[in-house]
Image (cartoon, rainbow, N blue to C red; front, top):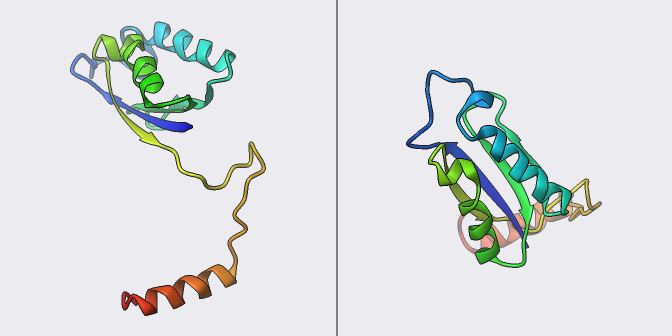
Length: 119
């Protein structure tokens, strides 16, 4: 299963300190790097505006993700809060997966939506 972890400033986030100098940020970087090295983390990094970050990660189940995030030094020390979302099937350049949406898909969905009287 694939999950998206959204990280946002927590109770101990220092507004007067830039993102990469926040407390426990070096430990967080190493922690995520180790998961990446073991093939779990697919993508990770800060938002461009440095107001938080995101991790796309593979796991066997939600318990594994919960354990992973609760052991993150920035989460344990309330630098970040987090939200976990299960990633659905979609498009992926990494895995060469595409549903090949086209006009036929639009036409089919419009037909269904008309039958449901939502358009």
